[in-house]
Image (cartoon, rainbow, N blue to C red; front, side, top):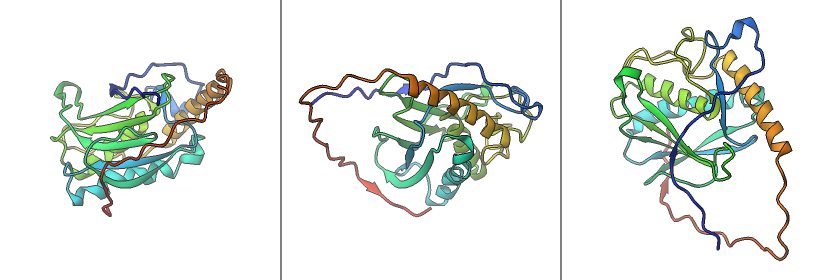
Length: 234
């Protein structure tokens, strides 16, 4: 059986050109710039929360952004949706899996409290799996919602926009530790930018070379995933 390389890497996004937007969505003012680290179009992403990292009472705040991003799935052209699957004892590296967990990522100078870490098996900036890491210092429940909504934005190719006006994009900066940025989901400008990203992603996927078939290759036997998963209702 072929081995699979599954080392976690920090998300590094390459800034690229974006099609012109309307004046109401000026990049750097109302809309974030973009890169092309994304989920594959039409993927259903399985969301897990690391066991014991968050209280049961915090789960609804962590999961609320799944609904706001799902609501614009068709409008963005990504057709990517998120579904909560429960808790896990360790971060998962399965295809289209995303684990929400705690970790020390705090940087006061940048007001950096969260981080998206991801891995692309094909090395083509299409994400295979990812983790959202939230610093233990972030405890305000509304800020937890803001943090997850923001990091999901990164998974659609959106970059930070610290110069953007308040309430214009989910990619704005936190005002301070445990002070909400009042963005629980994507704005209209975020939707427009993600749509531009996925138009480019779709074109790239259509134009990529097709692998030559291997005669007699019957594939690999499935491997059971024995990671304990406990479903907890938010």
